[in-house]
Length: 180
Image (cartoon, rainbow, N blue to C red):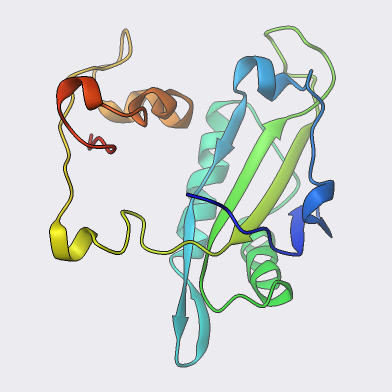
C-alpha cells in the first residue's frame, strides 16, 4: 500500500516539511526499537474531520512511554491539539494519524535512558484498513498461539513485539493479516 505524503509533520512542537522528518541511522530507535506509537483514525463527518478517541489514544501512548521510561514534555491535551492542527494544516477530510515517540541520536548503548526523546506525528490518506473489498468479501485470518518468551497474556509484549505478528502467514495457508 503506497503512502501519499502530506505537506507537514509535527516534530517536538513544530510543523516541519514531510521530507525533513528524518532520523540518524545511529539513533537508538534504529538499533533497539525504542519507540512507542499509536494509530489514530480521523473520519470525515458533516461537521468536518473528527479524530476518533484522540485523548484515549494519547493517554495510552503516554502510559506506554512510562513503561519504557520515556518522558516527553507534551500533555495529552497538547498532543490532541497538535493532531487537530496537523489535520487542519494538511487539509485532510479523513486520514490516519501516526504519533510516535522514539529515542533519538545520542548514546548507542542498550541502556538508552540518557538519549533524547523525539516526538513526531504524521497524517496521510488511508482508506479502509483491510481494503475496500473487506466488507463485501470478508478477510482471511488465522489465530496464532505464538507468544514471546515469558509472556502470559498477549498484552504483555507491548507495541515493540507486535512487529513479529504483522508478518505474512502464507506458509500457514492464510492471508496477509493475523488476529491476536
